[in-house]
Length: 563
Image (tube, rainbow, N blue to C red):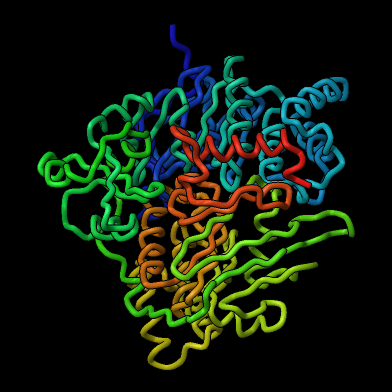
């Protein structure tokens, strides 16, 4: 007999005129890892909060562990664990102090604490870091602490809202391994994620879009629908970025097209188009993401207008150059150690690495947000330490976390940043309107920036970074937490700028985005341990994530690399 931890019938949740959850009926089976995926604003977080009793339904019924979250919330919380989308612990408390606080909230007796804490600290690998402030933990360690606190009280049902956002592939794999071990003990896990490679390994997946559930089942069943429809496209006389642009604006019936190493990954279901393209496409195995993009109606096609007025006139041999960049904290901690690389005009250069490896430190030194202890950062040949103001005039910068003014409207943010970048009069007015049109910001102009959905926050941040037509663009995890469709839209704009000569430096934890880069530097323990093209970094048959983990493990085994 199948046991269910939750039964949802005809669930509806409205916020004014907006229907966030639209007539969803589903049962969640005990002992399963169930993925919750879908675009920004699809209703995923609202659904989780309804199950927790943090929101009340407009209509329909919910039973979780036989209880009604609307009326039995206190009793229900004894049996469930919850890890919110944003780090919800106290950053000014240590690891052990956070555990003690949450244990008290769960009414765990003093006698139980010692054994429970030891088990959780061992389980998450946090035993050596008990006295470290939570705010000083790396992204992966923060998520492990959040998971440990959610597990206090031995919940029967664990709800995780985007636990992998901003976390490197190694930490995400460790997190997944821990959660799989929990599921073996008959715990049910509902895991919301924007990483579709992550969702591919779940027992079941619910795909939401515009408040509706449009798929519920085993991920592989959905993936199988794309057999014979996924290809790698290559043309000897055309670089991958030019081929991608040609395909996107061809007007053909294409489901998806993204750069993958030296080729373009192409999803086509139309037989006539397959026949037309047969001379330059090779069939490959489909991925879960291919199927999700198809179900959601396909990726945004057409040509980006972002680069329409861009003209890069620089004569510099290298647009970006790191020369023995070194950052030392406290006299003996080397966050970055003698990092050197050079980036040519019109190149996308990626910085990859585990949380805490030094890539953000390197990134900040390159764009002038942090002064190097030793070494130099050059922008179009200008030494950032000697003439930062001139170097900054060539840059556009998009921060890892939303860094615009949350308490200003979208229009006010656009006006402010246009002024900061020296735009005036009709040019300022035209550039702002261009960003509004390209990024569909018109309906949000009078809304506070802090209240925007994540995807539109990122659109606003990118529009503020590029409205002055910079020749160099620094992007620090620009698509962290956003859905695949929004990521494709972003990269369509970025690729269009690169084709016009803009140089891009980007950090990312999405390994498929690493494939979009011309070259990559893999940073670990403050060192650049590998620099090359995606194909040079991968071994035959490897995914980029496999290569990332292999290279890190090899560096750990060969300690000389890290000296």
